[in-house]
Length: 506
Image (cartoon, rainbow, N blue to C red; front, side, top):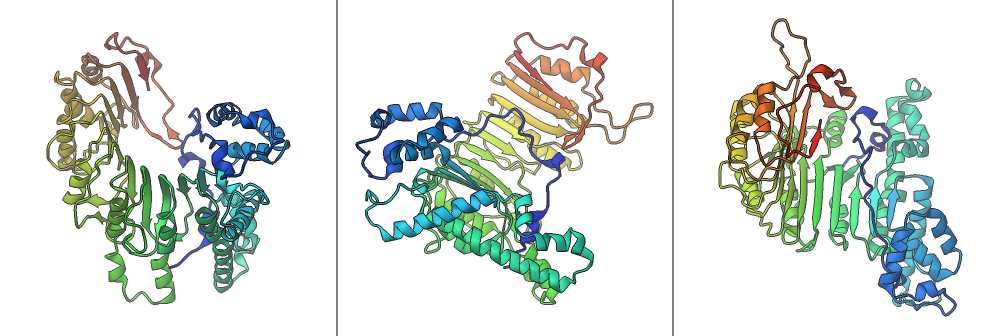
């Protein structure tokens, strides 16, 4: 399997990053004091605060969890108060490859070694552990920290040395930096999670280097309930089955954005050993995805799946049904692979309440009776067979409360979707979001790149009596390419909307 740490040095364009402005932070509440003390008794000299009932003390700590000054002062009182402060300070930790995160990792490795040497964790002769306070881990190396730590490699590609060094020298620098990153950072992170974090509940992994079977052997044996793999690459084809993974992985939420490791094919072509190119093209992550879902199917409640399939087989297939008795939330809106009939059957047999779908041909079948929210990424007139299958799917679910259709061809919205929504069957629909794209080939006498919501469509939307929330938008809305030139005269005209609508957005 091939790795290249240089990929993590590339900065993202600000225009394509997720807009987090105004969004609430995902708060992680601290663990109760007895849990982070791991059986150690509260010292006789501790404050009365530490002797309060754990639940009351927990409520107090929740109030000051974000007050860094108060926590710093509390940590200076004694070892018990220090551990109480740590329960807030280290409830969520980031491994971003910064000097601070590397120092924290070194401390956690020391704690892992100490745990291996002490069976009795309540031993008062050792200090309390930081690792016992950690509930969530985020592994997301920042490109600037990676570039700074491996400046010789960065300069050989983007710096002054780019034109002076040979490709052989650059490859040697890349291998040295990658080996160093894996040996002193990524592998120790996995060891720390396994041996030093007994209360770890959630793992968010954003490392772009290829993941191997050993990684999943570690992760599937952790006590986590929430797992997110964002933009990761997998360099091997394997099934997550015993003894590599346990029979049951009790995840409650799983977010997968995965693809085959693209570097391996380019590495083979560079070295002239691409004799099995056809075999590579037939590679698929379907066995990996299926077996991972099988391991956690009995407990899974939320699933987000995006299989990019830029390399190898673009299909997603199961060789047997997978049952999800508790799955309520399913988001495959960014999935670029093509699910087969068994995948659709497995997913749609779950008691779904929220469903986000991509622009793909959907199977015919019975409606999802428990469905409350339905979101479609977009509608494109380039494939009317796919459009009709999506319209038919929407038509089978007039009982939903929320419906969202992303930026779509105006003709499809005006002539297909809007008439469907105004046929009088949508008595439960309280929230509607629609987005019109601009006309790619405007008619003569009209301005190019203009997006328009027709008056007839507004009238039809206004006839939906159950609506309480309405969001209508038009034009390009990706990254920096927003169309800000708005016809205010048109938007200020009275729209034929019902008075029952309490929230309007655009």
